[in-house]
Each structure stands twice: as C-alpha cells, then as structure tokens.
Length: 143
Image 1 (cartoon, helix red, strand yellow):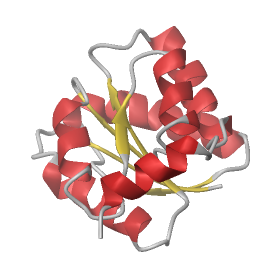
Image 2: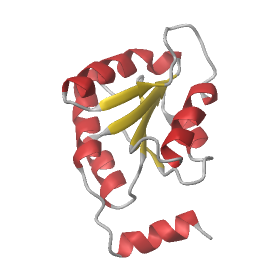
Image 3: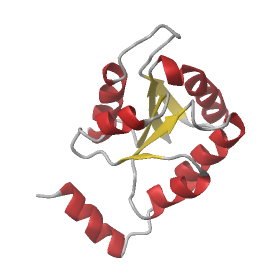
C-alpha cells in the first residue's frame, strides 16, 4: 500500500518507528516531514499529506503529533479526506469499517508505544463495510 506519512516534532519518534515497521511489511511510504525534533507547526506537514491522499497519489495517510487532535483537524480541512483520530485498536477498526477513514491521526503523547503498531495494523487491514455507511460517507462529503 502507498502511504503518505508526516508528523510534527511531537510525533517524530513514532513516525520513525512506523516508517521502519511498515516498510519492513512491504508498504511504500513517502515521508512528508518533519525530519527532526526541532519544533515545527504541524499544518506545514499535515496539509501536504492530506492533499496527496485527496489527489489519489497515495492510498492512505498517517499524521502524528503530541495529541493528534490538531493534526486531525488540519487534515479534515482538505476536501476528500476523512481523517480519524484513533487511540486504540477498536477506534482504528471502526474508523475504517464504518467511516472509510483514509487518513489516520495519532498522538504520540497519548498512545503507549506497545499499542502503536497494533492500532496502525488494524487501521491498514480493516476494509470499509459499505452498506448504510456508504450513504453516510456521501452525506459527509456533500455535493
């Protein structure tokens, strides 16, 4: 799967862990930054990730920050993006199953490291259920 990934400084460490783990599983990743722990304004990284997913250049996107809240808000400003802030496996499963989330937001300060990969693996492998949920997605996306 082609995945765009980006973080601010507060999500940098988890971003690097995900790049290694997902790359080892055969996923193709593009790192939109940041590339250090130097403070950065998260919209500068998140918006390009969201735009790349919305344009169809990537199947999915992952954005990370301290809490993931601002990153999710910034990503969801891009038309065609359905970014879900997930904090456990069940929230990740439902984000895909019911909401067809194409961008995942994660908070490094709020997710224990042992839970990171199971959350992301669940989000990547869960298919959209469709059915009544497709109607709701159409209502979210609007005319």
